[in-house]
Length: 394
Ligand code: ADP
Image (cartoon, rainbow, N blue to C red):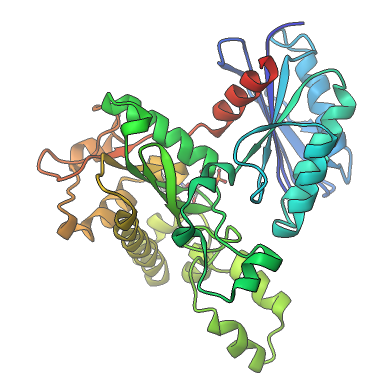
């Protein structure tokens, strides 16, 4: 047995696998896409040839193929010491990562009603890996767990109590693994300990969320009962007036159609009318495409409003942190967002920003800025690998 740790991220139509060595360095990773479609395919890091998956491939079949391909690699003996799984919703049951056993599986199943698109596929990955590696400890790491420290005033909606008591309707928050990593990394870069570091962390990928972290703990976050609330995202609307459900019902639009519209046809895609890809939208805006310009404006303005809102939960602020594909790579989005926050005394340094903070330990703010603004690459897989290793040896 070697000392590698496998990380599994089973999404609704894709599957990501990463292998870490004993020093927690990533050695191989794989992405299987378009599962359940005839052209399903997988790519392994460093391999030229994509792996053709069986037509109508399930997560189980794809995992099987990828493990076989991994086994041909020198870095993998075929028996990891632990397997970590990303699980989207842990409800109020899971405040931290958990060793997978029949009780954990049934508790994850119980949370599936809160994340019908995610938890069942996460579970499919867990079950497939348990069949492939019955003797290896497996660990679930939850997107929601880091936010279980939210105070009640931040997690309760102003709804009748029965919504919370009977149906569990409250703010759960997501991207917890990434926000947790930001808290650790920001503290390290600032030369502080996480327990004394307070930040506002903006994770901006295809999904986007922002979290206020007070002395290392999540105290407010923009995503809610589901990952739909809050910031403008690739295809998700973020905040809208809940009155639109009723209004659209009156126009003959069904609940299913509203669900699809808000989750799959809105956000950057809806506003630009072209794509959910921020890089393309910025290019289109640059070339005078007005709907794309508007998409950037709405995105940055909403984000700036949320940054200001997050200060209500903090007594001091060590840094504002940008991460995720957009947060890490787009000087334009960072700069346009921070421009709205002049009253907070925030200022970007154009040169440092252009280099994504690589010249200055992540810092992209000017010397005059009242608070540091950092950009930090996220690494959710590393957090999952660490947690899996820790729990497996405990
Ligand atoms: P996911 O949430 O699927 O992991 P990522 O974190 O990779 O997604 O983020 C994807 C988003 O990052 C896309 O909208 C992509 O266009 C955007 N992005 C990546 N590089 C840039 C860039 N240089 N400028 C603007 N947006 C970028």
